Image (cartoon, rainbow, N blue to C red; front, side):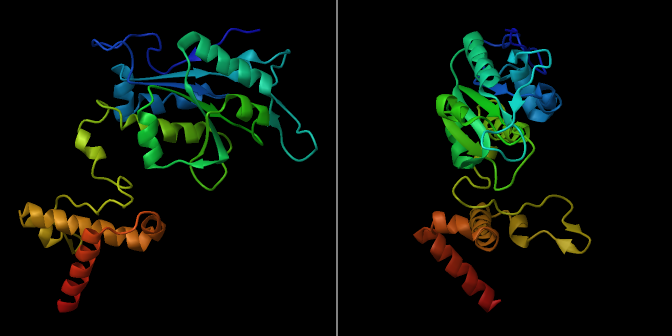
Length: 270
Protein backbone atom coordinates (compact mmCIF):
# COMPACT_ATOMS: atom_id res chain seq x y z
CA UNK A 1 0.00 0.00 0.00
CA UNK A 2 1.26 3.46 -0.83
CA UNK A 3 2.36 5.89 1.82
CA UNK A 4 0.14 8.91 2.48
CA UNK A 5 1.12 12.14 0.80
CA UNK A 6 0.42 15.13 3.06
CA UNK A 7 -0.13 18.24 0.98
CA UNK A 8 0.17 21.79 2.16
CA UNK A 9 0.31 25.09 0.43
CA UNK A 10 2.50 26.64 3.12
CA UNK A 11 5.18 24.97 5.27
CA UNK A 12 3.27 21.86 6.27
CA UNK A 13 5.89 20.73 8.78
CA UNK A 14 6.81 24.12 10.16
CA UNK A 15 6.18 24.99 13.77
CA UNK A 16 4.32 28.11 14.91
CA UNK A 17 6.59 31.04 15.55
CA UNK A 18 5.29 31.72 19.06
CA UNK A 19 4.93 29.65 22.22
CA UNK A 20 1.77 27.78 21.17
CA UNK A 21 2.13 24.00 21.21
CA UNK A 22 0.29 23.81 17.90
CA UNK A 23 -2.27 25.51 15.68
CA UNK A 24 -5.53 26.73 17.17
CA UNK A 25 -7.33 25.14 14.22
CA UNK A 26 -5.93 21.97 12.68
CA UNK A 27 -7.77 20.75 9.57
CA UNK A 28 -7.35 17.52 7.62
CA UNK A 29 -8.82 17.47 4.11
CA UNK A 30 -9.33 14.12 2.39
CA UNK A 31 -9.61 14.97 -1.29
CA UNK A 32 -8.82 13.62 -4.74
CA UNK A 33 -7.69 17.12 -5.72
CA UNK A 34 -5.35 18.45 -3.01
CA UNK A 35 -3.94 21.03 -5.42
CA UNK A 36 -7.35 22.72 -5.60
CA UNK A 37 -6.60 24.39 -2.25
CA UNK A 38 -3.21 25.88 -3.14
CA UNK A 39 -4.12 29.50 -3.92
CA UNK A 40 -7.00 29.52 -1.43
CA UNK A 41 -4.66 28.72 1.48
CA UNK A 42 -2.17 31.38 0.45
CA UNK A 43 -4.59 34.27 0.08
CA UNK A 44 -5.64 37.07 2.40
CA UNK A 45 -6.04 36.67 6.16
CA UNK A 46 -6.35 32.90 5.96
CA UNK A 47 -2.96 32.71 4.25
CA UNK A 48 -1.44 34.81 7.02
CA UNK A 49 -3.02 32.57 9.65
CA UNK A 50 -1.54 29.48 7.98
CA UNK A 51 1.85 31.17 7.63
CA UNK A 52 1.75 32.23 11.28
CA UNK A 53 0.87 28.76 12.55
CA UNK A 54 -2.58 29.70 13.86
CA UNK A 55 -4.28 27.48 11.27
CA UNK A 56 -2.85 24.32 9.72
CA UNK A 57 -4.36 22.45 6.76
CA UNK A 58 -3.11 19.01 5.72
CA UNK A 59 -4.37 17.30 2.59
CA UNK A 60 -4.41 13.57 1.91
CA UNK A 61 -5.50 11.96 -1.36
CA UNK A 62 -7.37 8.62 -1.38
CA UNK A 63 -5.76 7.94 -4.76
CA UNK A 64 -2.45 7.37 -2.96
CA UNK A 65 -4.07 4.34 -1.32
CA UNK A 66 -5.87 2.89 -4.34
CA UNK A 67 -4.75 -0.47 -5.67
CA UNK A 68 -3.82 -1.39 -9.21
CA UNK A 69 -1.83 0.25 -11.95
CA UNK A 70 -4.47 2.91 -12.57
CA UNK A 71 -5.16 3.57 -8.88
CA UNK A 72 -8.90 3.51 -9.47
CA UNK A 73 -10.87 5.10 -6.63
CA UNK A 74 -14.40 4.74 -8.04
CA UNK A 75 -16.69 2.03 -9.36
CA UNK A 76 -20.21 1.64 -10.73
CA UNK A 77 -23.03 1.58 -8.16
CA UNK A 78 -24.65 -1.66 -7.05
CA UNK A 79 -28.21 -1.80 -8.33
CA UNK A 80 -27.34 0.14 -11.44
CA UNK A 81 -27.78 3.81 -12.23
CA UNK A 82 -25.75 6.64 -13.70
CA UNK A 83 -22.33 7.80 -12.60
CA UNK A 84 -19.66 6.32 -10.37
CA UNK A 85 -19.30 5.97 -6.60
CA UNK A 86 -16.12 6.41 -4.53
CA UNK A 87 -14.93 3.06 -3.24
CA UNK A 88 -14.67 2.67 0.55
CA UNK A 89 -11.16 1.12 0.75
CA UNK A 90 -9.02 4.06 -0.44
CA UNK A 91 -11.15 6.58 1.45
CA UNK A 92 -10.92 4.60 4.68
CA UNK A 93 -7.17 4.15 4.25
CA UNK A 94 -6.67 7.90 3.67
CA UNK A 95 -8.72 8.80 6.74
CA UNK A 96 -6.88 6.34 8.97
CA UNK A 97 -3.46 7.33 7.65
CA UNK A 98 -4.10 11.02 8.33
CA UNK A 99 -5.20 10.28 11.88
CA UNK A 100 -2.31 7.90 12.50
CA UNK A 101 0.10 10.61 11.40
CA UNK A 102 -1.44 13.58 13.19
CA UNK A 103 -4.11 12.44 15.64
CA UNK A 104 -7.85 11.88 15.88
CA UNK A 105 -10.14 14.47 14.32
CA UNK A 106 -13.82 15.32 14.27
CA UNK A 107 -14.78 13.84 10.90
CA UNK A 108 -17.13 15.72 8.58
CA UNK A 109 -18.38 14.26 5.30
CA UNK A 110 -19.38 16.96 2.83
CA UNK A 111 -22.47 15.90 0.89
CA UNK A 112 -25.73 17.49 -0.42
CA UNK A 113 -27.70 15.19 1.89
CA UNK A 114 -26.11 16.59 5.04
CA UNK A 115 -27.12 19.06 7.74
CA UNK A 116 -27.14 22.61 6.45
CA UNK A 117 -23.99 24.47 7.43
CA UNK A 118 -24.64 27.81 9.13
CA UNK A 119 -22.95 30.39 11.35
CA UNK A 120 -23.98 28.66 14.56
CA UNK A 121 -22.34 25.45 13.40
CA UNK A 122 -19.26 27.39 12.28
CA UNK A 123 -18.93 28.70 15.86
CA UNK A 124 -19.36 25.19 17.21
CA UNK A 125 -16.67 23.79 14.93
CA UNK A 126 -14.31 26.66 15.79
CA UNK A 127 -14.34 25.29 19.33
CA UNK A 128 -12.97 21.95 18.11
CA UNK A 129 -9.24 22.09 17.69
CA UNK A 130 -9.01 19.39 15.04
CA UNK A 131 -11.36 18.76 12.10
CA UNK A 132 -11.37 16.41 9.13
CA UNK A 133 -13.26 17.35 5.95
CA UNK A 134 -13.97 14.40 3.67
CA UNK A 135 -14.70 15.52 0.11
CA UNK A 136 -17.08 13.44 -1.96
CA UNK A 137 -16.93 13.16 -5.77
CA UNK A 138 -18.92 11.72 -8.66
CA UNK A 139 -22.28 10.31 -7.44
CA UNK A 140 -21.02 10.29 -3.85
CA UNK A 141 -19.22 7.95 -1.49
CA UNK A 142 -19.98 4.38 -0.49
CA UNK A 143 -22.50 4.58 2.36
CA UNK A 144 -20.25 2.50 4.61
CA UNK A 145 -17.86 5.45 4.83
CA UNK A 146 -20.72 7.52 6.25
CA UNK A 147 -21.68 4.83 8.74
CA UNK A 148 -18.16 3.94 9.87
CA UNK A 149 -16.31 7.24 9.75
CA UNK A 150 -18.51 10.34 9.62
CA UNK A 151 -19.21 12.14 12.89
CA UNK A 152 -21.26 14.68 10.93
CA UNK A 153 -22.55 15.08 7.37
CA UNK A 154 -22.69 18.68 6.16
CA UNK A 155 -24.09 20.51 3.15
CA UNK A 156 -23.34 24.15 2.31
CA UNK A 157 -26.62 24.61 0.42
CA UNK A 158 -29.46 23.11 -1.54
CA UNK A 159 -27.58 22.56 -4.77
CA UNK A 160 -25.15 20.01 -6.16
CA UNK A 161 -21.43 20.57 -6.83
CA UNK A 162 -19.01 18.37 -8.78
CA UNK A 163 -17.22 17.58 -5.52
CA UNK A 164 -16.72 18.54 -1.91
CA UNK A 165 -13.63 20.69 -2.40
CA UNK A 166 -15.53 23.97 -2.76
CA UNK A 167 -17.65 23.08 0.27
CA UNK A 168 -14.50 22.28 2.25
CA UNK A 169 -13.06 25.69 1.39
CA UNK A 170 -16.27 27.35 2.59
CA UNK A 171 -16.16 25.50 5.90
CA UNK A 172 -12.46 26.23 6.43
CA UNK A 173 -12.88 29.97 5.87
CA UNK A 174 -16.10 30.28 7.90
CA UNK A 175 -14.56 28.42 10.86
CA UNK A 176 -11.05 29.87 10.65
CA UNK A 177 -12.20 33.48 10.80
CA UNK A 178 -13.75 32.72 14.22
CA UNK A 179 -10.43 31.49 15.62
CA UNK A 180 -8.63 34.09 17.78
CA UNK A 181 -5.85 35.84 15.92
CA UNK A 182 -7.09 35.16 12.38
CA UNK A 183 -8.92 38.45 11.86
CA UNK A 184 -7.19 41.76 12.42
CA UNK A 185 -10.20 43.00 14.39
CA UNK A 186 -11.80 40.40 16.65
CA UNK A 187 -14.93 42.56 16.93
CA UNK A 188 -15.58 41.94 13.23
CA UNK A 189 -17.17 38.58 14.02
CA UNK A 190 -19.53 39.96 16.67
CA UNK A 191 -21.71 42.37 14.73
CA UNK A 192 -22.29 40.65 11.39
CA UNK A 193 -24.83 38.59 9.48
CA UNK A 194 -26.30 35.50 11.17
CA UNK A 195 -24.67 36.12 14.55
CA UNK A 196 -28.10 36.51 16.19
CA UNK A 197 -30.34 35.17 13.45
CA UNK A 198 -30.34 38.53 11.68
CA UNK A 199 -28.71 39.86 8.54
CA UNK A 200 -26.11 42.55 9.03
CA UNK A 201 -27.13 46.18 8.55
CA UNK A 202 -25.98 47.93 5.34
CA UNK A 203 -22.64 49.73 5.31
CA UNK A 204 -21.35 52.97 3.76
CA UNK A 205 -17.97 54.69 3.51
CA UNK A 206 -16.45 57.70 1.76
CA UNK A 207 -17.40 59.66 -0.28
CA UNK A 208 -20.54 61.00 1.44
CA UNK A 209 -22.31 61.25 -1.94
CA UNK A 210 -21.78 58.92 -4.89
CA UNK A 211 -23.67 59.24 -8.19
CA UNK A 212 -26.50 61.05 -6.52
CA UNK A 213 -26.84 58.67 -3.57
CA UNK A 214 -25.99 60.07 -0.12
CA UNK A 215 -24.94 58.34 3.07
CA UNK A 216 -27.86 58.32 5.58
CA UNK A 217 -27.73 61.38 7.83
CA UNK A 218 -27.92 59.28 10.99
CA UNK A 219 -24.47 57.81 10.28
CA UNK A 220 -23.01 61.31 10.01
CA UNK A 221 -24.63 62.57 13.21
CA UNK A 222 -21.91 61.48 15.64
CA UNK A 223 -24.64 60.22 18.01
CA UNK A 224 -23.45 56.68 18.75
CA UNK A 225 -26.61 55.57 20.57
CA UNK A 226 -28.76 56.80 17.69
CA UNK A 227 -26.50 55.07 15.17
CA UNK A 228 -26.71 51.79 17.12
CA UNK A 229 -30.54 51.91 17.19
CA UNK A 230 -30.70 52.81 13.50
CA UNK A 231 -28.39 49.94 12.56
CA UNK A 232 -30.42 47.48 14.60
CA UNK A 233 -33.59 48.62 12.86
CA UNK A 234 -31.92 48.28 9.46
CA UNK A 235 -30.80 44.77 10.38
CA UNK A 236 -34.34 43.73 11.33
CA UNK A 237 -35.85 45.29 8.21
CA UNK A 238 -33.31 43.67 5.90
CA UNK A 239 -33.90 40.28 7.52
CA UNK A 240 -37.68 40.68 7.26
CA UNK A 241 -37.50 41.47 3.54
CA UNK A 242 -34.68 39.17 2.39
CA UNK A 243 -34.73 36.25 4.84
CA UNK A 244 -38.12 35.95 6.58
CA UNK A 245 -37.21 32.32 7.35
CA UNK A 246 -34.68 33.62 9.88
CA UNK A 247 -37.42 35.49 11.73
CA UNK A 248 -39.48 32.30 11.81
CA UNK A 249 -36.59 30.49 13.48
CA UNK A 250 -35.51 33.45 15.62
CA UNK A 251 -38.66 35.47 16.48
CA UNK A 252 -38.43 39.16 17.26
CA UNK A 253 -37.58 40.04 20.83
CA UNK A 254 -39.80 42.51 22.67
CA UNK A 255 -37.10 45.16 22.22
CA UNK A 256 -36.94 44.52 18.48
CA UNK A 257 -40.73 44.66 18.17
CA UNK A 258 -40.80 48.06 19.87
CA UNK A 259 -37.97 49.30 17.68
CA UNK A 260 -39.78 48.10 14.55
CA UNK A 261 -43.02 49.81 15.61
CA UNK A 262 -41.15 53.00 16.35
CA UNK A 263 -39.50 52.93 12.96
CA UNK A 264 -42.82 52.37 11.21
CA UNK A 265 -44.42 55.27 13.13
CA UNK A 266 -41.52 57.56 12.19
CA UNK A 267 -41.97 56.65 8.51
CA UNK A 268 -45.68 57.50 8.69
CA UNK A 269 -44.95 60.88 10.23
CA UNK A 270 -42.31 61.52 7.60
